[in-house]
Length: 131
Image (cartoon, rainbow, N blue to C red; front, side, top):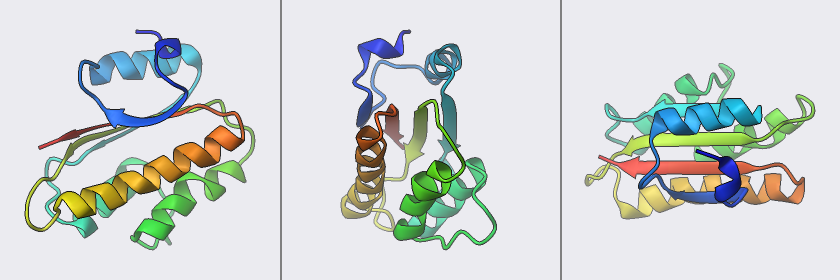
């Protein structure tokens, strides 16, 4: 799989892509690969905690959507030049504790992060799937 066939700053369903192919494509492009399996998550708090653990966020991570945005943008941007990102959120919950509105709010954070990195001409591709 070649990342050049995917828009450089996008949040989209994983569809026909395989996680292993995305990981390999990120490696061959020299980009960060961030993966979170959310199969055990049932609530917004569970999702945020799982992402924080998988992405190795600092211990002071606030476990809210604003803190998630900060960790995906400013914190990383201040760490120095970045080569690009391939993010996979696998098995987002689909239940009353994490409903469509909660999923859209979460994905909006990643869309905003994609815009942040696009302004800096750094690719940020996020792929997601549902349980």
